[in-house]
Length: 143
Image (tube, rainbow, N blue to C red; front, side, top):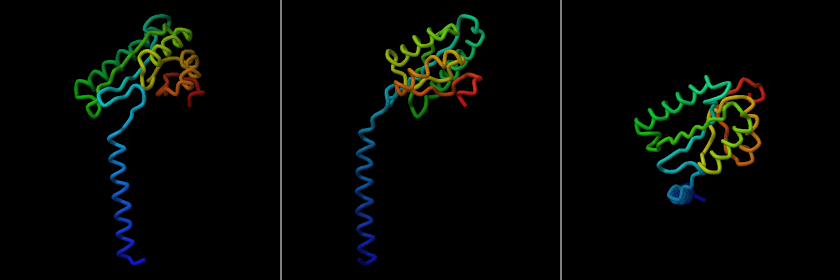
């Protein structure tokens, strides 16, 4: 095959890939909790109970996400930050995780606080394939 023919075949293949790629982009499907306009992020914090002093972390995160939204969001998408109180109680954390995943349909759970709470929800979160990002715990099991 001549170099010209090879170049023509390569060009045709490249055009086919580019065309099919743009069609795929037009039909983009997001995971639960994400859309063209919104990203739902869940959080579980001890706003009450023995570790309630750490609740300020959740309030600070909410303020930061509000700042991002006020500045236009992330590529035009607003962050819907949903944060629930678990009172630093593992059974309550499981209840709140289920609510975030099944009712609120969040994309992920972000920076939930406490080794007992995060350990309690880990198996459930994995079974639902919902990421636990930036787990706030000192336990080495999360390293």
